[in-house]
Image (cartoon, rainbow, N blue to C red; front, side, top):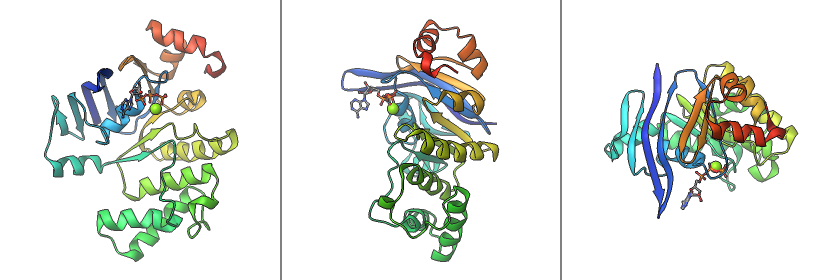
Length: 251
Ligand SMILES: Nc1ncnc2c1ncn2[C@@H]1O[C@H](COP(=O)(O)OP(=O)(O)OP(=O)(O)O)[C@@H](O)[C@H]1O
Ligand SMILES: [Mg+2]
C-alpha cells in the first residue's frame, strides 16, 4: 500500500532552484534511505513533506489524501490532518530545553490529542522505555548526552502515533558510540514495521536496514533501487561518482 506519493516536486529559494523535479513513492513498511551530496535538497524535501516549507509545484499525497495537488495546497485543516500522520526527527534534536523529558513528551500529546495527563504519562513511560531511557523521565534535556537527546526526540515523535517517521540526518551530530545507540533504536523501529524515510550518511544503516535507496542530486532523485543496485551497480553517472569518491563510506 502506497503511503506517500510525490510527483514533480519543485521548490526554489529566491533564484536558487533547490528541488527541480522530485518524484518517488513510499510503501507501507518501507525503510528508505535518502543519500546525496550536501546541498542536494534532502532536508528541503523532508521539510516540504511535513509542510515546514511550501512547494512551488508538484503533488504530494499521503495515504491517498492530497496535501498539495499540482502546486495547490488543500485547505488548512486537511493539511494539518495529513501532516499529523508523519513524525519528524531532526539532526539537532529540537527538544524544548526548558521542559523535562516527561513534559517534552506529554505536552504536545495532550495539546494535539486532548489526552489526559494520566494517559500521556502512561504512554510516555512506555515509549521512553522503548528507547532505553527508563529512569530519565524527570531529567532536563541539558543533562543528557546527544544520543540520549535524540532518543527522547524519537520517543516524542512516536507519542503522536505517526504512520510514517521522517529522519533528517539523526546521527550526524553524534560520535560513533552515541550514533550506534540511536541507530539501534531506529533498527528496532524498522523491525516493528514502522515506515521510515531517513536522510543519512550512515552507509551501513542504508545497506543493512533500508529496503530502498533514493540517491538525490541536483534537486531530483537521480537514481533509486535496492541497496545492492544503487551501491554496487549504479546506473546514473552521478551516483557512481558519489560512491566512488566517498570511498571511506563505501558500503
Ligand atoms: N530557507 C532557505 N533559504 C534559502 N536557501 C535555502 C534555505 N533552505 C535551504 N536552502 C538552500 O537550498 C539548498 C539545499 O539545501 P538542503 O538543506 O535541502 O540540502 P541538503 O541536501 O539537506 O544538504 P546537507 O547534506 O548539507 O544537509 C542549499 O543550497 C541551501 O543553501
Ligand atoms: Mg540537510
